[in-house]
Image (cartoon, one colour):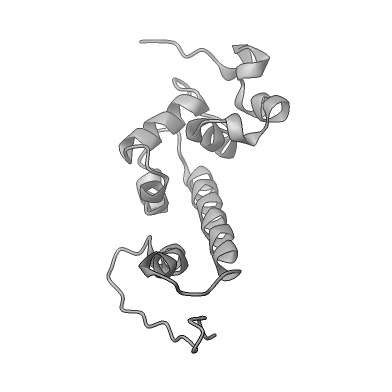
Length: 143
């Protein structure tokens, strides 16, 4: 059995929280960001290693991660209900942030414009939906 090397024993500049404080949020990997969210790993695995394992299960795709349920996340040893909820909550905040940015420019100029508006709303759904966007004469989305 391999013993984990606790994050506390890592060099200060390599620990996720300290790395964020010293170098900023943009230098952290997705696994390090998730490790900060979950706070701790399990007896045999650091939070970073656990986060990497979760990300590997979804091909390192954050959108795929966002589609996982609380129950699915809890299947990973070391992830309980509270940690699963933290991950899902953070991903939902990111989705809402993206949606708010999109709302600032709701003029339709191409299919990409429609995608940018609708993807945050329906991109994670497990079923198909049919949506209609109503536009005025200037191709602005009517509310």
